Image 1: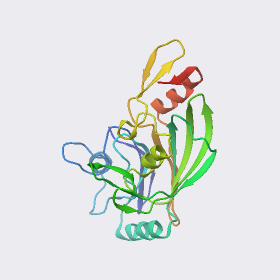
Image 2: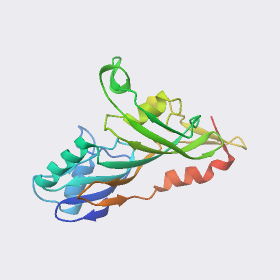
Image 3: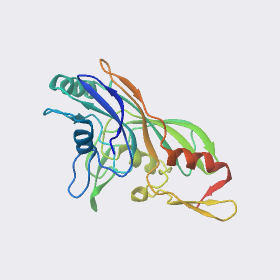
Length: 225
């Protein structure tokens, strides 16, 4: 199935990434880059994603289609004007209504696929957090990553004591328990790239996917478990 196109011109292509697909090719899995080439007929050498959303993460992915656009993307990333807004569901919610997390992130010495605060070869990392709404034990966060480290938002949320729902890698709850005792499974990481913008390029938004919206709308009668 072709991913939904949010924007397209000669320099840029933005699509809505579904969960269950990597952004770039990875051995043994289908990637968003391959889907875009095959289903949308994108030709040429350049198809450069500005963000590499994790396998389970949904939302806007903006591609540079020319070498000039790729150079512009590198410049705006370097000077911090590549703006991204993520929405996340976490449990428990953070104690403070807003914060800026500046904990450096490095490779987990025990598992090269994980990242931790500190760790091996740590790099500076900065994430701005706002608690948009709280429903019982679950919080809806709006997150602005000011840097682009691997798993940055997932690590910062977990380190702050509010791991993402469904994020088993970083201690997130994998199920929620209804007030009547029924258990609702959380099948993936509840993280969505809602907005992307950059100077000289488009400003784009993607609505919440159905599973994220359905989960949130069910929360008044749910407690974490």
